[in-house]
Length: 98
Image 1: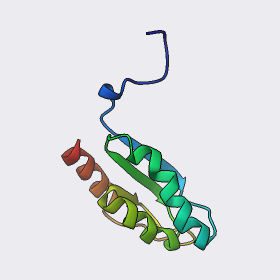
Image 2: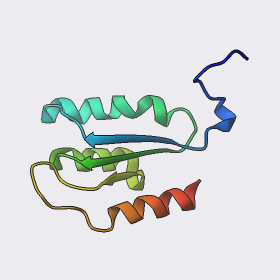
Image 3: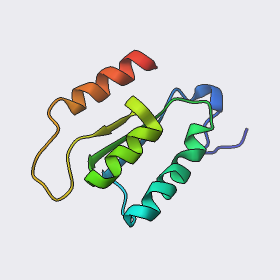
């Protein structure tokens, strides 16, 4: 195989989408588009996880309804509060599911 940045599927243990800020959709548009954004990684058959430093409160519920426990929100947009323990939950979840 020629040099490539494409991994063999058998070598990939997880797909992790990491964001500084989550989604920037209008609320109605976001509820549909978030599901479409996750279609490709969810259909690979490889465990998929989503983590963001800050997420809009209006999209955390939508994201959780699609990904269940596989999404992690370290903080909330427009606030200075942090979800204490979320990073640890992310690390433990990854360790226990891969």
